Length: 514
Image (cartoon, rainbow, N blue to C red):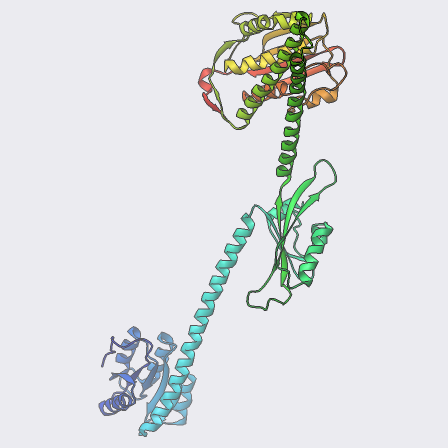
């Protein structure tokens, strides 16, 4: 009799192996009467064939059979079906055979002839053990699956922690760090030794953080995160961190129970704080630069409105000129601000072409002639036409030369000189603007290029300017991979040198200056 493929796998099936048809069928009918499904095999060879393709809960095996006897069947079943329990049902019921089959792994021994109830009792004990074994196997499989899920979750959590941009510290109830990530180690300067197994007060020596962690650990009712700004270091290279502190609570534990620990998240806000300071300073400087000329123009307009200069054409022209000078400074400030903003935002579009710097320099010297004459400053140009051409946006080059030339005139002395020299040196185009003006200290030279920075001394107090011109020059030169160099001696003059690399047209892409 072959197994019934329609029966569910969870129902125990029994294999009856006996060469005597009467016993074989008799046992099958007894089992069927008790609700068990049995498959029969007339010899040991057939039993092993069935066991090779089907899993049986219990095998009832006769010992004395022609060919493959019961001993060999039990031995082979233990190899191919370790979960199948073997019950010996045989008239060969000697002590030696019982001991031998038990050593081979047989579950029990029933001697022929037997009462059906005796067989059923032994069978039910075997089936109970089979069910327990199946349940144990299921639990082991479930445990392995859960362990695998835990391993996967642990690996996923480890990956998340390792890739976090913010630093993470997990502190236990004793105030020791039990978990950290690379970001935290980098922020706290503990890249090699790490933070784990160290007291939080050693890893992050900030009393406020320690107090908040202690408060969370001792106050079960506190659940809202706390944010603090922490400064590390004691010099100009301070690092500013935002620490977010929150308790770690088990959702299955009562709310009034102390937390299992505290998590501290660290975010580097050094750049954000620096930007905030710069923005505040920028607004303050712009307001200051706007206030002075607007106030001056307003004062002159009040003089006009009050009739204070009526009938005084000379004074009227003088004050009108002062108004134009102040409004011109305002327009220059606005234009410089707009240009710097466009460049910082990457919205400046360049239109590259070959420009003759010598020709442009002579044109700008002529343009600034009246300003130079008014200040009694002489301008000389040393540049051969066509000898120094650069691939550049003409507007950018115009701003560079104009700013340098205008500063050389404004900060010069009456009767002073300005020399504008253009040359080719070692594969680069060099533009030098030298003046005989008031010069600058070494500290002032070091700050050139900072937005709104101007040298402060009695000689510069009466000179209008915003401090944005040189900052704009530096941004333009940097955008062409060039260099701005400054040499200056107080009361002797300054030399501004712009070095632009010689670039072939095929090496340059036009478009947005980003």
